Length: 208
Image 1 (cartoon, rainbow, N blue to C red):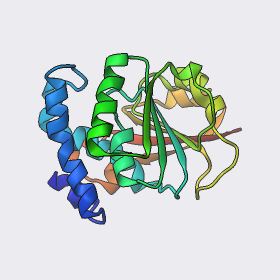
Image 2 (image 1 turned 90 degrees about the vertical axis):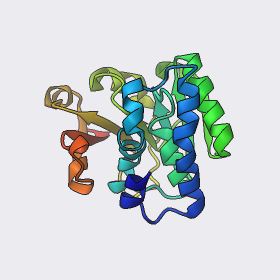
Image 3 (image 1 turned 45 degrees about the vertical axis):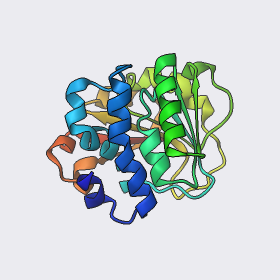
């Protein structure tokens, strides 16, 4: 929890309270439905909460922005982002029903009225969104084939609408043939923790 305060000291007391509730909630649900690796729970705030919130170190969202979290799993990055930006609308989707059950229970426990969570495959979704976020659920070419037609052409924010993809390691080959403009942000530059040394945020936008 202290590591969240280290990098996001401007959050309100209510927001910190909700972030503090995350660990016990996921401990409880993880004992019934395995949504987070058991070994990762020891590093829950660093590897899941702060990693999710890292998007906000590079991109801010104005009120009314619509964000789709694809392959949310247990609710990441969507739930930490929704706590941090209550004026932004989030739709969290995953194809595994038991994971969405956990997400909905966490959302209910936290009283997050800016979040909806549904069981769905990404390619079956309807509607448009300003940004689509994800934590590297699939290689980028496959992911883009699912979601690229769900990005709205009406820009509200300071950066172009598009995909915000949290990814680690080397992936230049995945980007080269996509036909999209992109920018890569190094998480370690804004949050110099060893865990983030190889972690990136990829912003893909506008067909070339």
